Length: 299
Image (cartoon, rainbow, N blue to C red; front, side, top):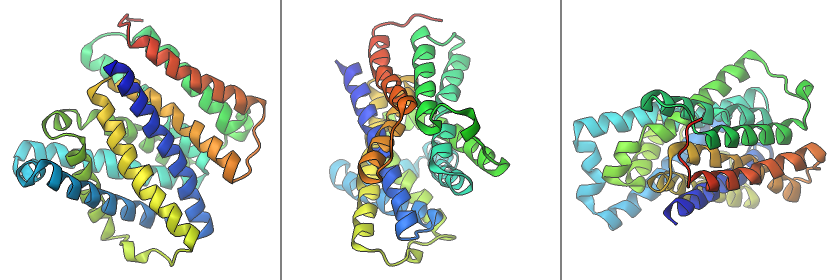
């Protein structure tokens, strides 16, 4: 049951991320919010919210203990720089140089790096179910964001480079905080990572550079901050306590799914045959990973 719970909350986190992607895209297009300012602002305030919660829930000693232990602080800073902050910036940079679809498909190659890293560390071949689930998820995502046409996937060098950085740092954001999560819990680790990363980015892109938001813009930003950042990251990292990192990474396939469905409802996006097939493949990924939780067979 614990494995199922881990799969469930990882999937829900990905859904919230997908919804948040749509809301952030609307913020940039409707209220003309600079993507770098959006990243620094949401990280700073989301981190602060989590730390305040951790202070009252876990106490002062536990909340600040991660900063007073040299080795733990070093691991935290590695996670901030090469995971949390760089991943956020790289994803939005990819979107800036291309579009949301390109950014999504490039970032979603991150399970490849997760599975390869785990196989390298454990000196074992990937499980058959990991490979099958990865193929289903990647093909499904490809169909959704390109409508099944290779000709529509055309990107420049800047988009490709930032997209690969987003992919690698997305994998690192899953792999790096493992030990810290066991010692301090996801709320404290994610809270400090977001707050420190947001604070550092604010020197270049402070939150007061946000333009005056419309009423809808305020609601969109609130969703991105609470559901797409605070809750999604908490659920994603908390799921690592119940299931493997490779499983959590593959469940990210629900991000493009939820983003597509939200775009259909709110942005009047039309879905064709290839997009429908992609949605079916991504949903099947959840069943494949649930089945894989019972088997540990090598490829």
